[in-house]
Structures are given as structure tokens and as C-alpha cells.
Length: 129
Image 1 (cartoon, rainbow, N blue to C red):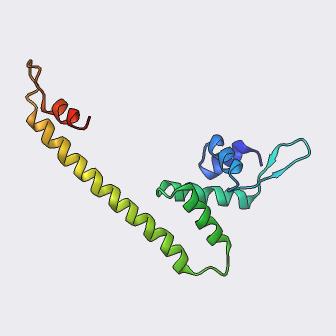
Image 2 (image 1 turned 30 degrees about the horizontal axis):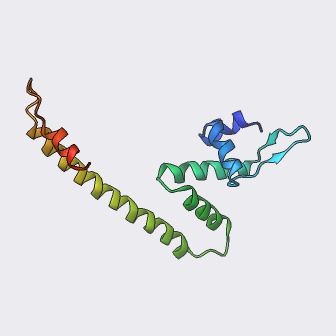
Image 3 (image 1 turned 90 degrees about the horizontal axis):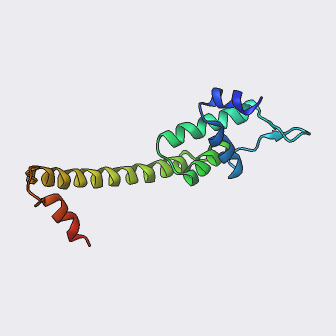
């Protein structure tokens, strides 16, 4: 199967598939002329990686999850640990975004948005310098 077909079936752009190959997440066979020869198992791995990336897992987390997926002696506790760490990171990010939103909302409300040059938004941004 060529990369175009694999791209369509796995739901990933060819560039992403090549990148995943470059970093060793998938290893398609190579024909004598050097073309990639993808197997069903490669498509399954790529779809797995696509779903994991959609959930925001890092490349290293994806590598870990894929290794765990392929390890029939894995413990689900190992998988849960990776997912819990990621969930904690997401919660931290959400808290940061909420704080950013609250600050920016306050600044937008404080700015008159008229013809005068004074602006609380710019004043606040200048404090950081």
C-alpha cells in the first residue's frame, strides 16, 4: 500500500506519516526500489497515533502508549499512569487559560476604546518589561 492510500485510511497527512517514520514510531517495509510498503499493522499504528495526538499526548507519550499497546504483558496501571499525568497537565493548562482570560477580560473592560491614547491594556503589557 502506498503512502497516499495509507494517509486516507489512517486519517493522517503523508507528511505526518513520513515524520512518524523518521522518528521510529512506524517502520514500514521498503521495496527493492525504496518505496514504502505499508502493512495493515502500520495503518492501525498510525490511526492509534492520530487518535492519541488528537487527545494531546506528546510524541514521547505516544511512543510509550504504543509500546504498552504492543506489550501483551503490560499492566493497565502503566497506561493509566501515562493518561493521568496527561490529564493533570491538561487541568493545569485549563487553569492557566482561565486566569489569562480573566486578566484579559478585565483589561478589555477597563479600556475605553476611544480616541484617547491612554490604554490600560498597553500599560499592563508594559509592566512586564
